[in-house]
Image 1 (cartoon, rainbow, N blue to C red):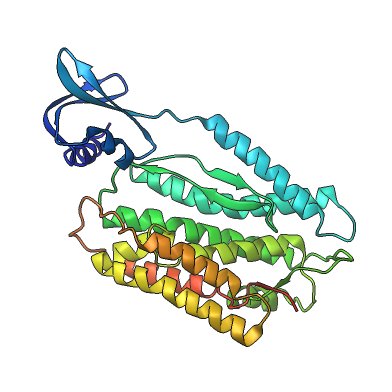
Image 2: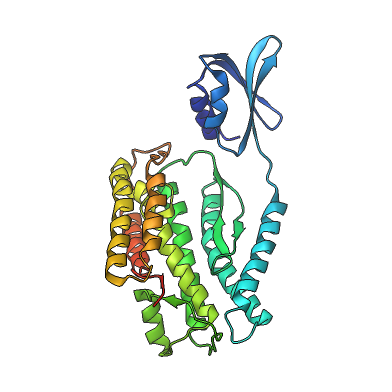
Length: 339
């Protein structure tokens, strides 16, 4: 374990124990402690990335903290399951059930989602942070997945690291979305005889449609995968809690970001209500739902980096502002709706 990580663990343990010594053990750290109160409650404050055990050693109370070993086979299984679920869903987007078309759609979706998460992964590694490979989440939604996540372990050293890790995923993801959308809008498509999915068009998608000369009513599933990437980028860049936008705003504005984090869910709920009243198509429901979800996120203050005093440089402030503007270009008030 790195010294910063050990110090963060020690700081957390000191809420429940007096620590008078510690030493390295195979795979982790052993702390020699005197309990302050209900010693069992400390376990729930720790990340799931650690195995934490309290016991006795040579008549002294000890707390052993070990890093959990990665299980890459879980990532592989989830990736395969998500490939299958997105392929099956994508196969139904054609005039007839089209397995090959479903595979193409699956690759497009996985490319967009994977690019986003790998952006986080490589930048985190560049900063020397411990992070997992992406965990894809298969689920029977209209795209066959709930997206993907990666897990970060240990403290963030400073605001620059927090910013770089937070902004990298959305920026790489939106580039992937632009590429996929550009390709998809140049492909012809015959929809299934059943009612097609109706989507609102964000400004960025519209610009690509103009650039490609697209003027049709139906888009190819590959273009839909690009649209999904844009929509996910907007949701992730909301400046709330530990969403990507929350990381970026916390790095840019410091503790003042908590005000924005608490206001954003309320804005989403009001937006959802306004859309529902004006449109009456069910499109506002998603904003109300996401507002309630982000309201939960906003209740938990964003963890501060170890160095929370050094502000970001001007270049990162400009990049962060650009990232929020780009995310707003991925917004549409009626993402998915019915006539």
